[in-house]
Length: 280
Image 1: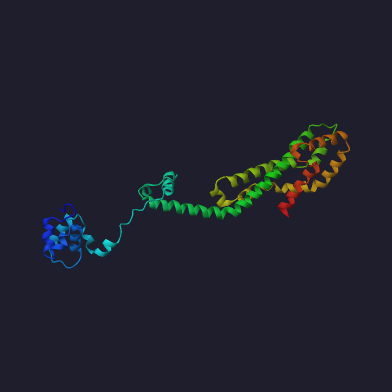
Image 2: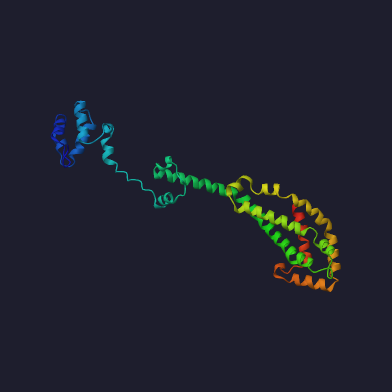
């Protein structure tokens, strides 16, 4: 075998029979000179000698067509090192790779993760507009439910406990009509919309909030009853205000922070605005 970069005596015999002695006895890389002799030019050596020479050089015969000039001029390609951020992504990845991916090179896994990131980004961008619309509907519904809650908890229920001496139960029902039923129905609707918006994105991508309105809005027919009763409710409210005890009670309720400086009449008209928003 070659020692200290110089060919063995057996290889020297092969080269000396075909090339000048200085081609194989050059101290500056005799092993490469021998490799050049074996791979370049027309050497008249037997296949057995050629195979034995390659084995001593620990080279594969498949390299016999390498151009020596390109071999000497081309620098060794540095080993490609994955960026630390990519390797950290691979280590921190929460995906449970199958046995096929577990044996894949880090470069392949990094490309897969990058493709998945691009796909998720595209899906998020495609959902941006419908998501913004759904969030706006949810915000409007939450504000409306809060207004109905004030009507029921601050005005209607305490007014029912006043007694017949201040206001009759019939007048209370005339003023508020079906407000309590609307409050309960819209509370459920608001919760379902919120669950669709802030819940599983894949479910929102498939159905959005359309299914919620298709399956939980049968109560919208109640608005016709409220609208038909609205003028009568205002007349009854003005008549009841002639009662000093009733007027003081309503005034105290209107001063509560939940009312936000709005009077009872402002709350009573809100379902009318919602009816116009839904059906007009």
